[in-house]
Length: 359
Image 1 (cartoon, helix red, strand yellow):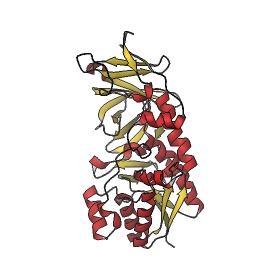
Image 2 (tube, rainbow, N blue to C red):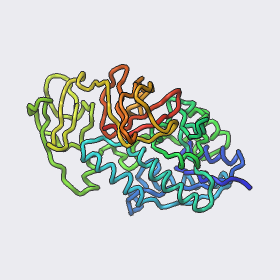
Image 3 (cartoon, rainbow, N blue to C red):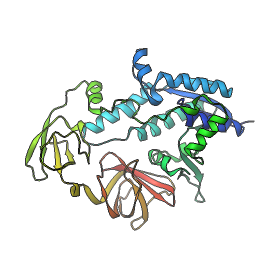
Image 4 (cartoon, rainbow, N blue to C red):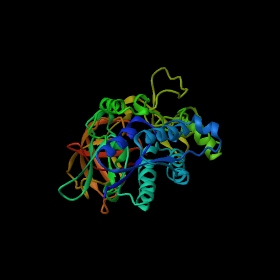
């Protein structure tokens, strides 16, 4: 009897090829597109981009028809609102900079989709993420960076649990993007030439502050730009407009480039400083999720990525809480703009050891 796999299909080339490869490998493949947009009117939905748009459903359905596999649309609006949008707004209101894709992967694409998939008799779920998955000699499942490091998506998947990984397949992790497009073209797939989606899917215009204002229906209070020692430099529009390391859009004429170095939600202040003020050699992370290893010990030498686009920096673990849920690490070389709310993801030899939210 064939093993059954539900493939999350966004209509793009990556998930389309994932479904194609799994069918070629002999799996019983079911395509599912996740309905997560919040807009009720068709015009707004059609304008939404990425995996949220109505066009994604049509593209995925067309690919499924080409592959002769069933395709369904599952409604995950409630989960997306709770775990992604509400979280996104709350984090910005607290002066942090969240990564909504991490929350979506953990709680929507896996937690919710996996449970529904298992409920209809599936053995696995699969996506078009650029990551590899292995079961290690210690019995734990771990993500391994994609063959295509430039496309690697393990950073945004660090928070998946062992149970979730045990029921997951990543069919395209051993291919480059060019190879994936070539496979799609050779198979005659509709999505072969479809461009990649780059933006946060529910904020296609990149205006996070306006989205937060519309969604929360609350007018954000303006406050002061200040120096580290408290000198007032001007007025800001509200802390959700800013993130650590930001230089553009500050509206400050100080005769030299300045940057956001800290956000103080308690006093509604945005601290302004110089480039060197952004450099640090240590950080703390909380809500740790362990992957290749079940715990960390002080003295372990690893590589840490502090944002999706970060190439990584060598570090050493300097402290681990008694429960293991919080860690402190020190970098070999200073890193720029460590940002609360982003993730610190730890690697060793290309495998994800674990990660947590930067505190």
